[in-house]
Image (cartoon, rainbow, N blue to C red):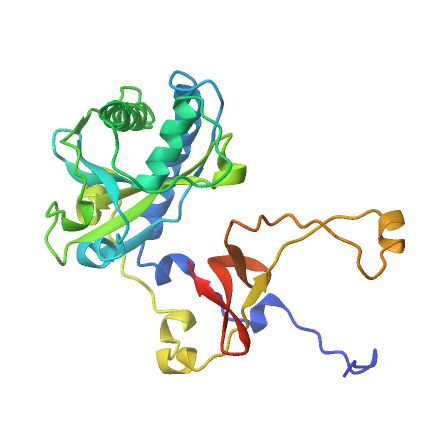
Length: 296
């Protein structure tokens, strides 16, 4: 019910608790600031170096920075992937570079100047593709070293490629690690989607390497949220069939039987949205007498 002008309640930002996303993700603020500066420089340099590998440009953006136990993050790697361990600065920091295999195939298709109309299916890499993958990981390591904020590039040594990173024993089960990386958008991304390049660092060693002192995490209102109450919240999901942009003349001439072409292809999964933001992919279907979607 709308309130009259006399009944309106004035509210400010002070009326709401501030949700600290870094605190919730267990990432020290100083570490996030130092790491972002390094990785943002990597993104710009990698866009330039990519043109030495492929004829078309790319756009690189940073993935969120989060902290996990190694077992927790490794348990999320359920799809076939390719990974390479690395050491920064004379073994000061250990880490892991990783691509899901379909992501790396998509990048290899870009390097080979192949046009895609959909996301590539998962398969074993050919000998040539494996060599190109090794070159891509090597280029990434060199670029990360050159992006080091100091004058001299930071030496980064790569290990052997691992086709089963979910079985990796690089760190102990409960070792706390930092996960981040970058999202790579290519000329094929509009049809096939972007590629996520995931990086994992040993957290304590990375903080020491970046000269970030450990700070006690202050408890905020967000840290005191009752998990049981959160689980009782209801969230509305919306399956988006597609969109279309029409001019007014076309709209006024729509009649029963008119066909409106949507942006969504019938052979691609639908977007599942929360608050108009896509969060999942799903395929449409039917169960009993109800329409349904199968989460991809």
